Length: 453
Image (cartoon, rainbow, N blue to C red; front, side, top):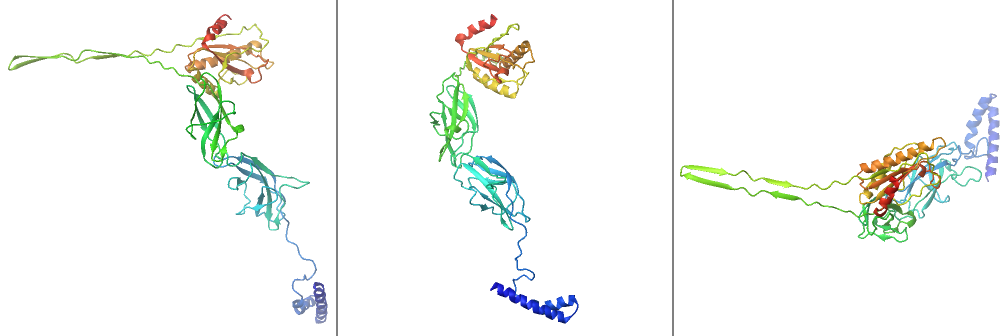
């Protein structure tokens, strides 16, 4: 049918051209006459010069590349991603929107349409079922959907992924700081994500995460109090959160350490001495004359006995003999009070983080007697002499001792510089000061060792 219509149009065109030739010898006039006489006879929809249909301008866009997904976990959501990327070629027609997919099969167009980066995906709002989320994109222009960012067998593939806790479960605190109490600890904390459901309580473990105990009464506000701890024993506490959907997985617990200690308060009685009350005597000589004699006003004297001043600490410097050479690492004894004060290379100066850790140690030692052993080390670098390194380690230990004295620690302290003792010590420990505590029963023994050096 279509072929017959084309052939018919060709026959009409031939006749019209013949008429045009007879109308004028001029080529231009022949064309005008032909169109004027026969143009209305050509069937609509059939090209005048060709049987081919014209194509659209340009093509669909190419895939976006170079995905960069920034994953976050807001306090009231189990997560979101902020996605940036490099757009592909628009195919000659401007990109007007994008479509996204979480399985690279079903793609959903942004509504309203957008091409502005970053693209933010809130996983709670989207109600995604799994903790691991992958995102794929394709661009859209007037010619249709472009190709997916992932799945090209011979070119660049791009996708972005985030892994979060299972939806609905709360996170453990993000920060936690413990203050020692008498058989307890007070922990200030910053809560983590509530998983989309309010945190109603916290649980703690003091046996490495084997058993978790719920706070009773329940509490979801900072600070929390952890009871049932042993004074003088360094304790590791693990914390998890609880909401209506469950609790933080044990492997994601927040860990904090503390050494509980009992407090002793001494009250000195006060003595008050008071003079007898005022006495007044009146004598009348004659009816018209009156003489009044008044004893001086009452005087009250109050004497308060001042509480005794705490005794100053005994600070012993145990200098390592310069000429001696320590071939093996020292055996450090006693209970560790800290994981160590780390110094900058070749420096004995305490920085703000060192002082913050020593402030914590000072609070612990305020409740104790005994002796604090302060052991200084330096890092061997192949250039400095053994004498220089021993003096550097001694200066570090001395500065730690001086700082604790200034903070009011009143227990005995012994500090010593070991220099660059590298065997079984380790890189970071080579330039640190370690603090350990010796109880009263061994205090005199260690002080004598220091004095006899």
